[in-house]
Length: 279
Image (cartoon, rainbow, N blue to C red; front, top):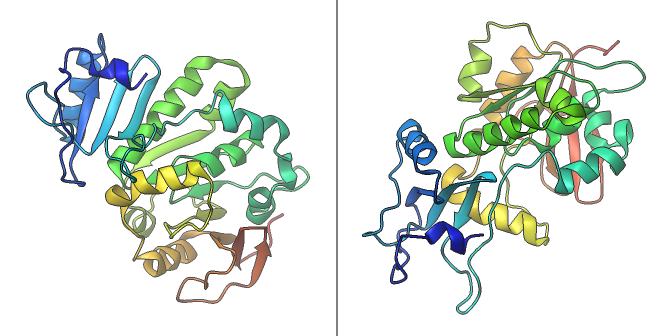
């Protein structure tokens, strides 16, 4: 599929060595949608006369994807695409066989019995945890401050709603905003969320190809969440019942208030900051 995106671009194109450079690339027949996206995100369109950008936001019949044109090892293939897919693949498998309310994220946010708290996911990323919480019946507001990542997530939610059935119903319980989470939580005007879920960017130790691929693509865009202490402080000020923070299993807690409890898995844990009992 990646090769098909280069129809009309010419075979002699080279990769731009500026790793921070990002452009929008249209598959044949998707030029108008790509141009609109480029204008909205204030990004250049990949042109025939230019070297390939290091990162390409690609628009094709499958939706939106982010791809790297660089290689990590000489002779190796470029990093594959990252796209948000709630309809099939890993998310569909997790929805059907992931353990339901027994999953660690579900227990951390307080899902049990008939209890379904209102949740604010202030570091939405690709929306995987938010989709799990929504699939279990929670209404989830998602905040993502990186516009390209938010665009990928919005595209995935749009395709989920268009798919109909159970997936569309889940996606309808997810509302996405592209904004700075600290500012949004500080100036919050909507109904106060009972639970706030945080998953700040950290150096992943997971060796899976998928995680490594995503981190290589997202790190130049999102960087590290150096303001995690301020993010936690804003969340603690806003949430009515609890804040939960996803961390690597052996990583220190975020600086600031100490968690009141923790929940550990094989590679990650949740630090739980309780304010009021969920009932």
